[in-house]
Structures are given as C-alpha cells and as structure tokens.
Length: 339
Image 1 (cartoon, one colour):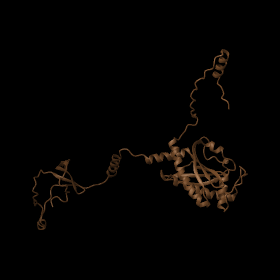
Image 2: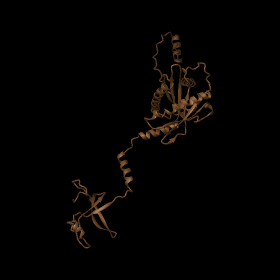
Image 3: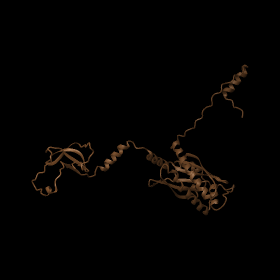
Image 4: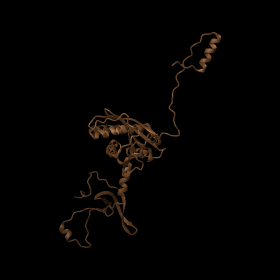
C-alpha cells in the first residue's frame, strides 16, 4: 500500500510546485510510542506477580493432568497454560451457549468453604473426544458438529466422572503455597439459566489448551476474585516472617507461666546431725548453726538458690526482704551445697 501523505506534506508539495523549487526531503519523525489504555471503570485488582503465581500453579496442574489423561485415555496428549487473564464475570458468561456444560466446585481451606464457586468449562468437541476414548473409541469428532450440541444423559454421567477427576487433582497444584481442597459440586447442562456470580464481579480466567492427536480444545477455569483475595491474604499471612520473634516468644512463654504455682523456700543454713542426736531432741534444745543471727538467708525456687535476703517482720508476719541475686561461681546447686 502506498504511503498516505499528511496535510503538511501535501501543502509543502503544492508550495514547491508553485515556486518551482525542489522539494527538500523532510526529516522523518520518530514513530509515536503506543501506550495501553487503562480502563478506570474496571481497575485491575491483581498484580502481575499474582497472575504469574497463578500461572505457575496451573502449569503444575497441567503437568499432573497430562500424566493423568495419558493413563486414563490410553493415548498421549499435551496440556499447557495459554493465559491467565483478569476479567469481569459477564465476559466469561457471555461466551457460553445453551449447549455448553458448566462445572461448579468449591474451595475449602482452614476448615471453611468459600461461598463463591469455581467454574470450569470444557469445549464440547474436546469433551466428546474424551468420552469416546473412555468408551473404547479413537476419539474422533464430527467436523460438522452442531455448535449447540446437547449432551445425552449417558454422556452427562461420563462428563461428571471426568470433571470429578479434574477437580480433585486441582488441590495438589497448590501444595507449595497452602494446603487446600477443591470439592466437586455439580454440573449445569444449561449455564445460561444459572448465575453463580455477579455479572460485574472480578474473576481470573485460566485458559488451558489440551491437544490430542486428532482433537484439541480448551479448559477454562473461572476463579472468583473475592476467593482469590482471601486465598492470597492467607498465603501472605503464612509466609510473613514475624518481627521480633524472640521478644514475642518470650512474652508468650511468660504469659503461659504467669498463673503457674511455684514453691519458694527460705533457707537459713544447713547442718548435719547424728541420728542419735535427732532422736534425743526436745522442746527448748538449741542447735548451733555456726552462723551469726543476722546472716543472710537463701531463697530457693524450684530446688535451686535464686536470691539472698534478710529475715524480718511485715504486718506482724515473718517475712524475708530480697537482697540480691544469688550467684555461685562453682555452678553448684543448693542440693549440693553443704554436703
């Protein structure tokens, strides 16, 4: 196609023709850089890192299902993730027809089940090919298949069996991030009659391409935005390193020990007596401890010396005033001292 001249170039040509001057070639302007338009009515909810994480999760899922299909269908196939795209739910819903079948599943983690369901759609030719292979066929699909083909009751039963397998294997792909479980719910033969999500709700569509030797098709997995927000929040909470770990641990230990009863023993001194001397002791006898009367006493906690103190009276009761922390340079506990 010939290059289209701008208005300034046309005016320059006409001016040069009138004056008879040769037209000087104009310098080519650099091509204008194109920018992607941002729709402020539909702001993006998930960052590229989050979408990249989902892409990695479903890459793992694709590998698992590849091995599963190879064994189940007795043939080789290729499954790969085509895209991870954030959309509004109506964009996903409007692409479905009355003949499509929609699978509903629920996510459960931390003992609770998310209300918003995960939606899975498999293109009709691909599902018919897999059903034919399960029935012993070659998986060939009629090229003139009606776009609004309706599954029979028998085909729907086999459809459910395949989808239960697809849903149950989805849990393992998240094991590197968080333990969770996808629970199969039901299939809807006419998805246009149900509306499990709000039309304007943010969703992420994972597109998986499945290729057999004689057939190919797509598996579309619709993940509700609110469910993903809760899931990403839980993953971030699990992976976040707590600040001041030592301080928090010490505080937790102290809180757990705060109301614990422990025995405190005030010990003046230790001495040794013969059994015969103890046998003849009576009221009024005096035992020489070989220590002055104003000597410090020891406060034993848990059978070990912790403090030294002074005997006294407080509110007409015998009491001990804590003096200092006891330290034995030999590292011997109270049970060894005096023996």
